[in-house]
Length: 75
Image (cartoon, rainbow, N blue to C red; front, side):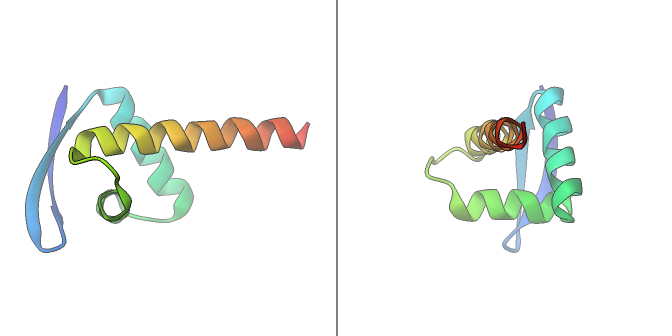
């Protein structure tokens, strides 16, 4: 687990995720032209779970599922 601290909506918070999830979030942020903080803020604002770490993992899963769907349609 890797713990990172950042500011969301004016308050500091920490998120603990596996390094692979942080790498995926960095890719997502880069491809969408966002900072990591902006991406996490977006995940925080749209989450349906009380746990931000879980919401981040689900966002990564949804993103990769979308990537797979786009690849299938392109073939």
